[in-house]
Amino acid sequence: MDKDLLAGIDPAWLTDTLHELVEVDSTVGYYPEIHAWLEEFLAPMGYEVTYDNKATAYVRVPGEDHEKTVCVGAHLDTIGLIVRGFNADGTLRVRQLGGVNYHDLEGETCYVHCRDGRTVVGQIICEHHSVHVFEDCRKMERDENHMEVSLCDDVSSPEDARALGVTEGAIVSIDPHFQALDNGYIMSRHIDDKGAVTVLLDVLRWLHDTGRKPACDTVFAFPIYEEIGHGGAFVPSEVSEYVALDITLIGPDYASDEHSVGVICSDHKGPYDWELTNTLLACAREACDEGKWNTQVCFRYSTDANAAYTLGSNLRSGAFGMAVLSSHGRERCHVDALVETEKLCRAYLMGEGREA
Ligand SMILES: [Zn+2]
Image (cartoon, rainbow, N blue to C red; front, side, top):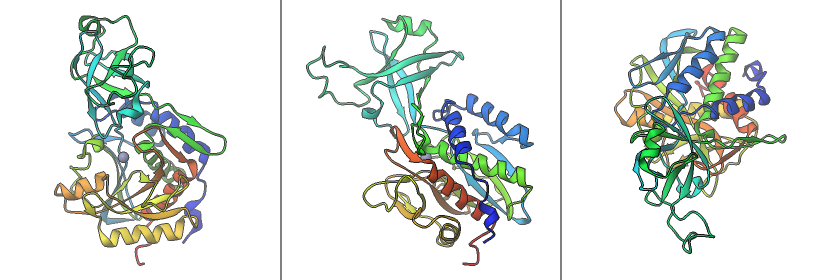
């Protein structure tokens, strides 16, 4: 393999861009801020962002070969909450958007995006929120019926909350709580999937800066409904191969750590395409550092590539991505995992591993 393909990946750029991205609120279905950010970020490189009707953002890059179009996707949406009603004291009753673990959200700052365009700062608390006040504080179930959003303002009734612009259907984003250490470790919410979005943006930057062309016409896709299972339900008709870049897992069953990229062979909906997955494995073998890639069966989650597959698109699907600890919580990875994910992505897009 042409090792120039892997040159110039800058861990500091990846870390800084990830930081910038996680700070842009984009809870499932809430896209105004992240779309504006994406357009502004890509415009100086001459890339045009287009959208389909379900608000998936696309960047199209012509390849050497126009016979085939491949798609690489990373979802913009993050897990969060939606306001479903009010308690008598003006705290907000919520419903989860995506696979929220309420235990993990307790005490975190959140941002309530109102339908009139206002944003109100809140905090996610348990109904029995203090050990000094409630005897059963530690025992109360942390679930949708006992967790609520307390607005950080003078609110003591539903009317007070409504006066700030909050209504049923306001969408709540969770503060990312980002921290990057000098040794390369990164702790933040929403590394799922903004780590992968960062990688795709860096690949676009690399193609722009080097003037290289991918092997095939390539669609970069950024859906906004992955966390509820249908971000990849629509795929442009010219696409015959869809590869999702999404998190991989750490723990029992997973031969991974925070430095690694994983190739997902199967998820909870079943296996990905045999040949395409083998191509991705061949790319990992060629492009990634020894010991920094692995294969995974992610049986408790699925990606947009499998959504595309199982919801009826006529295409081959595959997936890979950076391993994160504590997924859907305050996640942790090492910047190495982003570097390895980018190496694999470049190798795949430049047509490596195809004859293997
Ligand atoms: Zn994800």
